[in-house]
Image (cartoon, rainbow, N blue to C red; front, side, top):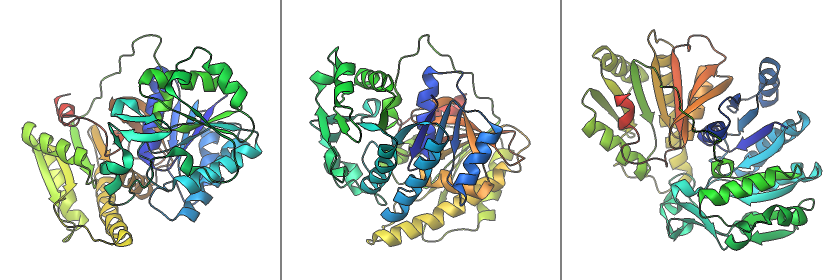
Length: 411
C-alpha cells in the first residue's frame, strides 16, 4: 500500500521523503505544497503521476489552531479516499499546533479503523524520547532552545499531553521497544483508536518501531522523519548534483543556521553574502540584481537576514514581520530561478520560505531526487515551465553541522 505523509511544513515533508527514498532509491517520492485548492491539486498530481510516497504539506505550524486542524482533516480524508496508508509527520521538537492537528488526524483515521504509533524521536539530531517525554540532548525540549523559538515555541515535553479526547494510551519503554516480541506487543495494543507512545534513543530503535508497525496495516504512524529510518540493503551512492550557480537563501534566525552562514562566509572564497536588514527591507529587484552580479562574477551567493535586530515581544507581530520577509525573499528566489540558463542549485533553509517560494512560482509538486544535506533533499520542480535547469534543496533551519553548507561550494 502506498504511504501518504501529512506534514505541518514543507521542509518536514521533503525531509520525510528523503528519509524514505534513502532505503527505497527507486521510489517515486512526490511532495505537494499547500495551495488554495488542495483537493484539486492532489487530484491533478495523481492524474499525472503514480507516487510510491506522497507527502502533503499543510503549511500549518504557524497559523491558528482551528485552521490548522481543518487543513489536516481535509488532507487526511483525501489520502484515505485515494487508498493511501497514513502517517502524520510532527516536529521532533514538538513545535506547532500539535494537539489540534493530532486530534483532526486521529479523528479521521479512527473512523477508518486505525490505531496509532506515536514515536517522534529523531536520534541522528539528538532528539530522543525517554519516559514519554521529548528531549534535545540531555535537556527536556521545554528547557532547550526550542522553548524560545520566535514563531512556534515548544511548550510541553510530555507526549501524552498532546492527545485529546478519551483514547486508550499505552507507553513503551526502551526495554519493550528492544524486546524481540515488539511486533506481537504492538499487535495486542493496537485496538481501534488507541495510541502507543514509544521511547527511542537510537536509529536502531526507530528501525525496530517502523518495521514492526508497518507489518500491521491498521497502524498509522505519528512521528518525525526518524520513524522512516531504515537500513538500506546495499550502500546507496547518490549521483552528484551538477550545477554552475549556487544560491543559499534563508529567513531563519536559528543558531544552527547562523553558525552555518558564518562558516560559509568565512571559508568559501568565491562567494558573496547579502545581508537583509529586517527593519529596512530593500526592494526585491535590488536583491535580485545583487544575486545576478554574484553569479556573473563566478561566485556563489548567500542571502540571509541580519539576525542581530531585536524581536518584537508580541508573537503575532513577529509572525507578521516574518511573513513580510519570507514573501520578499520568495519573490526574489522565484525571479532568479525563472531566468536561469545554466544549472542552478537553490538551497532554501526554513519551511516558511520554502512554502512561500512554491506559492510564488506556482509549483504543483516536487519530485525528491536525493539527500545532500542532513534533513534535506534535492528536488526537481513539477508544474511551471522554465525550471528545468533548477534543482531545489530544502532543509529545516535546525539541521546540520557548521560546515553543512560550505561543502556544497566544493562540489
